[in-house]
Amino acid sequence: MKTDEEKREFVRMDVQIPFLYRILSQEEAETTKCPTFPDFTYFTDFIAGELADLDQTISKAVDKVREQYPEIAETLRLLEQKVEINRERIDAVYQNEEVPLRWVNLSATGVGITANVSAKKSDKVDILYRLDNTTPIVLLRCEVIDVTHIGGTRNKLSLKFDRISEKNMRDIVLFLQEKQIEKARRKKGIDKIS
Image (cartoon, rainbow, N blue to C red; front, side, top):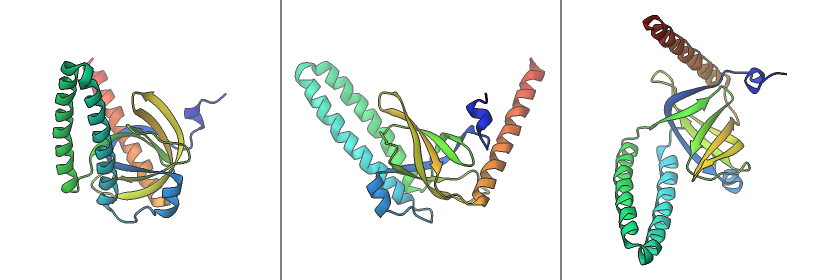
């Protein structure tokens, strides 16, 4: 009997690449087209909205805690300030239209990501990625194949590209082959040292 890895048509590998995503409900996906050009605000406005909603939820929860446990509430406020400082740094990155690096599990037919948001199999996910500086930015709509709860608010999303060009598939295959060769060379170098 073949394992899942042996059944795969294309190699799959964890890589760190510039990557953004936006989750859309089935209804939103029907009315919102995935951009055909690198539209950073399409992704950053979504992220900013999610952060603002989360900020409000956290503040309300801390206010409730403050009533009975003022010391704990103060600690939570300090953590909230720390998060806000990091958010300001993220905003600066987005204003410069730099796509943040993110670890993804990439193949020529789809991608696996870890997200701090909930998603359903009926949702769609628009992604923006760039393999390296020699390839163009790619925008694709994806189908949610699986959602695995990891813990807390973290979920692992398995995504399948809805429509991907042969060229983009080839670019991914070549990119992953190069990464495998790099990994083998590093391992070989480590083995020589040992």
